Amino acid sequence: MALVAWSPWFIPLAILWVGNRQLGLFILMHDAAHALLHPSRRINDAMGFWLCGTEVHGYRSYHLQHHRYVQQTEDPDLVLSAPFPISRASLRRKMWRDISGQTFYKQRIAPGLNAWREPPLGQSRWVSLGQWIHQTRWFLGGNAVFALAFTAAGWGWLWLGVWLLPMATWLPLITRLRNISEHALVAPNEPDPLQHARTTHANFWERMWLAPYWVNYHCEHHMFTQIPCWNLPLAHRWLHEKGLTARMNTSPGYAALLRQAASV
Image (tube, rainbow, N blue to C red; front, side, top):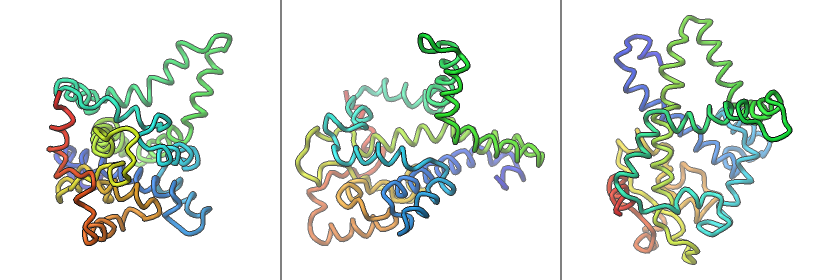
């Protein structure tokens, strides 16, 4: 943000960097859902909320169900991986919707508009809209506070261009790539824990722009759910020393994985 304030020419770089850091905040909140940020559950949950910007409790119940029933019918994340493989044209359309802001609009804005335009039968528009506001109060409130603070300081355009714009474009795209890399093309009801999820080998640039905080070590995360993200590379080396990585579901990189996911 400081670089963009100095020169708007840094906006494209900032969109990639800040969007990646926004995904990083979600990954740290994910670790908070596993109670890995602090030994005290109370402090851990407070860190997940106040420092990572997401309410932990609701996500925890959802996410632990994913771990309990990974790639099974009861897995709430199955809908993210089940459609693959898809065609290249379909993948391009999905990625365009992400980078153009359509996904952000569908997920963050359209539900509020629909709550007002099409309230449930027997419910007023105001009640319907109020329920949506209550459900998204932390997202709306947090962003409103930052927007007002930046505007009061005379930098409102900086919040729009370097916080909201990455959130609406680059973040949805790399979140989709992350979802594809973790479980797409993984066989349903797979009994082998080394095949439940995929580890994608990420180079320096992929880690910088796509895969923060070692999120690419996803097979290790499913095997050892109580290892924090910063120790996942160590877990990978340990598995390699034991001769187990040859049996793991791995990909040499994100480009190779996308070619495999869009192979129809």
